[in-house]
Amino acid sequence: MSEKTWSFPMIITEKNIIDTVITAIEGGVDYWMDCDDEENQWLGKHGGRSFSEKFAHGLIAGETATICDVEDADTKWEMTVETLIKGFELYFNNPLRCRSFEDHDAEDADTIFQLGLFNEVRYG
Image (cartoon, rainbow, N blue to C red; front, side, top):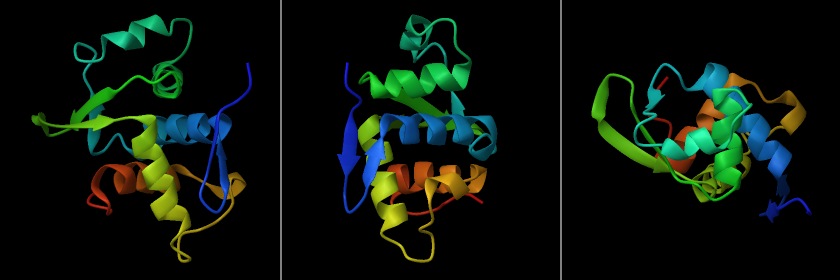
């Protein structure tokens, strides 16, 4: 099976998405975002992996994650691979933020998540 890619003056690979999601969940978004297992039963389909890997591979497979505000579980958003692509596009089209994937850290991954969801950075 060939790897999916997205481009908008640059190419985004599945690996880029998976790495960004894992980095975000394991250290970038946990201060503002939570994921309810009850609302995301599909996470169980991606067995044998860590939560962040299940989340990443689920998004690549077309799943929609319902995420919520860590302080208010009633405030919810939907995260898809398209949400992340939008976040990447906003991130990489800003010359103040744009840097190579190899240099990304948890702050970059958090920014990509927030840009995709909100079109801006709301937290942090």
